[in-house]
Length: 429
Ligand SMILES: *[C@@H]1O[C@H](CO)[C@@H](O)[C@H](O)[C@H]1NC(C)=O
Ligand SMILES: *[C@@H]1O[C@H](CO)[C@@H](O)[C@H](O)[C@H]1NC(C)=O
Ligand SMILES: *[C@@H]1O[C@H](CO)[C@@H](O)[C@H](O)[C@H]1NC(C)=O
Ligand SMILES: *[C@@H]1O[C@H](CO)[C@@H](O)[C@H](O)[C@H]1NC(C)=O
Ligand SMILES: *[C@@H]1O[C@H](CO)[C@@H](O)[C@H](O)[C@H]1NC(C)=O
Image (cartoon, rainbow, N blue to C red):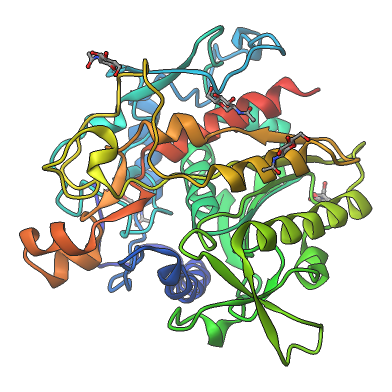
């Protein structure tokens, strides 16, 4: 049941959501420069707010796998994997029964730039894969259990457009178990957007800092993406100020770096001159600044810090032995032959830098090693199925030029990242 084109929420809600959407549009324009070739997030032309009181009833009557917390859902049923099980090593298996966790139209917070089916994608198998760790199983996803864990707490994703997608995915995973009037999305600044579950006094927040450290393209009026960013590798406190007193911090930074070989880096805080520095050197300097900030500002007794490893792109179909393919377009199955290592061009040097730095901090950082499992998922990208492309060009031309093989359809892969994050969060006492 969709209600596109009409706004059926209360006036205040509408205003709030519209404000966040306009902020979102600004974010979108910055995301553009991060992509190889195409703007992943289009302009929103219509208001996509749906009648969620109706959805609630629908979902309650048909969803099994996401536990909505009704009668008979006692938390004792959740079987946690052993702490020493490496949940990031495993394989993709088909699960038509319990996947996807939600449908595109059931999550009113989804943006139409990533609802691939609505934008014309006809295959849906990409939504039905479940990550199966080799040595244990992931606990069933229970939205209410997670929300209980977050009661009176703040969880914040900090980083680039991939973390933004994971944030939206997490909202979609929990929102159906919150009554319509008890959830709200608010933008506090151009960088910070907050989803609040009022009954739990819990927030799920997103803070835009694509390089973690400051850059000249963080600000609203510099988000056109037309010029290369210049970063301040030693400066982070302006952003960091907003991360204080958050209980769960999930950082990532990769997408905005990956198209460069040399980075423009300010020579001093005066920001008059810059040097061009080799990518790994600049990345390491920025991450060291971030690590120092975390060590000095996060109380490990109170807060948990996560770092998501890089989300891979799939731009050369020869990487997976399909010389006739066009980037990730038309791929409908994951890479399933795991007997040979996958190489889709992810920058392993940056990966190694992130592993080393996160592993040598005073505050212990939980490294979410999502890179390899995501590298198998050549089928899960937005490709040509964002509304921007649907409106602009006939399908064939789009295929060649502009497939987005960097971001992911939702529902989809970022839901799995959140299952892994959820596993970590509920495993910690
Ligand atoms: C939502 O949809 C239901 C069923 O169509 C309707 O009865 C209800 O009045 C709607 N609620 C709002 C706030 O429009
Ligand atoms: C990340 O996971 C992959 C796949 O299991 C594994 O090969 C790699 O060693 C892991 N890296 C780290 C740093 O944990
Ligand atoms: C709600 O949570 C915030 C932290 O996110 C806390 O500071 C505040 O005291 C809480 N309010 C209530 C009424 O529990
Ligand atoms: C998987 O890859 C290995 C190593 O390249 C190859 O020998 C094997 O035939 C492949 N299996 C399938 C089913 O394609
Ligand atoms: C990470 O640390 C190991 C051990 O100190 C070192 O051998 C390796 O070169 C480092 N990797 C990177 C990318 O800095």
